Every structure is written in structure tokens, then in C-alpha cells.
Image (cartoon, rainbow, N blue to C red; front, side, top):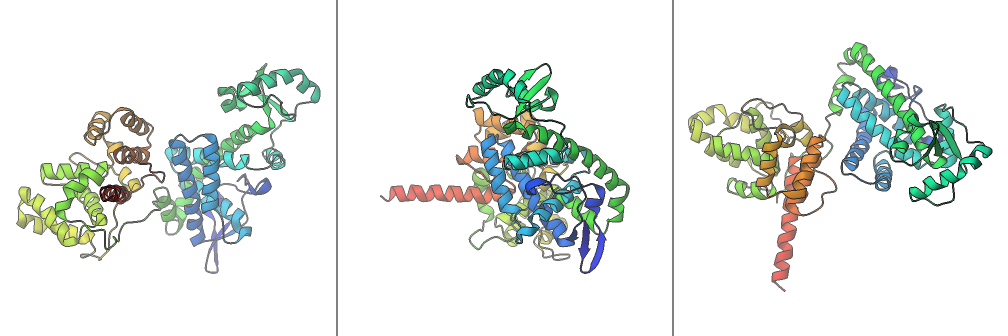
Length: 463
């Protein structure tokens, strides 16, 4: 694979680091380095599309979706993001995007673990959608040393296989093709008691061979990630520091939703609205910073940036932002010092000072990645609060019982954005299937819910 820009051909770092390739039926095994030319813009755009799929899978798993729901979700995500305008290029897009993200996610143990889990899940459900003939071809691609059970041995264990089938709710009629494999190679089937085991071997039906293939796939990708990381740190990172490295380092924390830099004409708030809006529509991170601002009449720079840009995205105009922060800060530092030391940064956020950059509100990913110090109040409460403080904060939002415990459970498993999504659902009594990915999304969706409820009440009162 080569990356090209204009007519110049450049080395493809992602493919150089590890192998790729296509498997049977258009489902790649990513083992043999592809001989492809890739334009620099495609390098990033293809990766972003695949990342949307993987993040959708991550959200589905975090929500505890059942296997049949996950299969439907994966199919919809793939159709929605990975189709290419030229059907012949769909396979190339699949391979290219995988290797770009392999390069992105090889760099730390945490990133490797997440990528390995999501890619394995994606492969599992794509494999299940293939025909039996294609599945057999993929088994040969992975060079699995298993042959179908001979008829005589099959007849000897047929009754046992039938018992297992009935115990897991399948038809009493037994499939005719089984594979005899060491039980430790199908831990998921053994753990869920979905196979017959005898003398250290598991009898795996053709409909269950996905477990065999996925185990090998996971092993291959895991080894490749380690190799890719070694090449990234020893050569690629420095060689590509002016071209690919910035893209690679940015993609793992990429946010793909609206940036909320421009509010609609109708989306406008004033300083007098902020306290009421905080109680009804602010996410926990912004509620917390407003409370600390009211309490201390001050926020450090990290808090001013996170909270100030959120208010900007919610519809607070520059003049109102200056008035709002001046009213609070002046109680501690005085108006003159505020105008001298703090007003500039607020005007700067609105693109009125310095390089005139119109800064955008922080996404959840950026907030979660923050490292607040002593005296700081920015960051993500779900990540940065202790359990006792988080429990108290959620209680203050009116959340208790099973809803509270569900949120805390997601926090313990490091699903911070899902914890925020569950908070939204608990406080608004609605489902939020898209998930919360941005504080201003939380605010915007909250306002929509409240407006719809108000309209319903008004229509009922007028009848």
C-alpha cells in the first residue's frame, strides 16, 4: 500500500508496519500487505468512517445489547459508513481503514486493548453474515487444522450432541457437520455450555465455527499490533512527523459530531437564564463548574475554557459572557482586575482577539482526556470524581435507586460517556439511543425534550 499526494508516491506507513489482505467473500483477514495506492485525504477519511463503526459497536456492547441486536447494529453501521461510491473500491476501503487504525491504536496498551476488542467483535458478526461455503473458505484462510467429524464418530456422539442442542433451545435435529477441537480453543462456547465436551475435546457445529475463526483472528491482530507498535516507535513516528504522525495521533481522540461553534438564531441564552438552565439542561460537568463559580467567584483557566466555550455553544453572546463572568469574578478580584486579566481570554474564545480563531466547545472525549490539578473543577465528573462525590452529585440531580447504581456500574467499567447518557435518560425520562458525545449535545437534546413536553401540556390544557 502506498500513500500518494498529487503525483508523488510516498511510503505507506500503515502497511509497512504490518500485513493486510482480503479473505474469502470480501471479508478480509488483514494478514498480507495490500499493494494499493492511497491518497493522503483517503488515509484519514477512510479511517474516520471505520472509527464510526467501531465506536458504534463499543456503545452497543456497553449498553448490553443481545447478540441478535448486535448483529443488526453491526450490519447497519457497516452499510452506513463503509460503503464506497465505487462498489469495486469497498474492499480496498475496508483494508486501508483497518491498517490506518491499526497504526493509530497500536501506541499504548489501553488503545491496543480497545481496538482488538472492537475489531474482533466486528469480524465476528461479519463472519456470521457470510454463507457456509464462504465460512469454510475463511477457515482455510486461517489454516485451521480441523476436519469435519467422520460419520462413524458423529453417529457415536449424536445423542449427546442432541442433548446439548435441546439444552440451549435449538432444534432436536442435530447439524450434520461438526469439528472436534481442543476445548481451550473455544472458551466462549465452553463458558456458556454450548458444546459437548469429551476427553478434552469440544464438538463444534458448523454454525459455531465463528468461535474458532475469531480466536485465530484475535491472536493474529494482537501479535500484529505489538509489531506495529515496535515499528511506530522506532521509525515511523519520526519519519512521518510532518505528515502522517499528526493525523495518527489525533484520530484516537477524534470527535465526529457537530462542533457547536455556530448556534442557530433561535438558540440564544442570557445570563439570567443560566441558573435555571443548569438545573434542567446542563450535563453534570457544567453544573459542577457553575456551582463552583457561584461558590468561589472564580474558575482556573481550564474551567474557564471548558465552561465558557460550553456557554458560547449554548447561545451566550460575547457581551453577555463578559457581563456574566465579570459579575462573578468581580466579587473576588474586582472589576478592574477582571477587565485587565480575564476579559481578554473571553474575547479570545469568541474569536475577537489574537489570531481571531473562533474556538469550538469541548467534546466529551477532550474533557475526559483532561488532567485537572488541585483547585481545578473542569474535566469529567464520571472519570475524575471519587465514587462518594459522584454519588452525592447524582443524588442532587434527583437520581437514586437502580438508575444510580446503573450509572455507577458504567463508571466502574470506564464507560464515562454511557454513564452520562444514562444520567440524561434518568433525568429526562426518555431514551437516548445516539448516546451523549458532547456537553452541548446534552444541552440541545434536553431543550428539545423539555420543549416537546411543554407543547404537550399546552395542547392538553387547550382541549
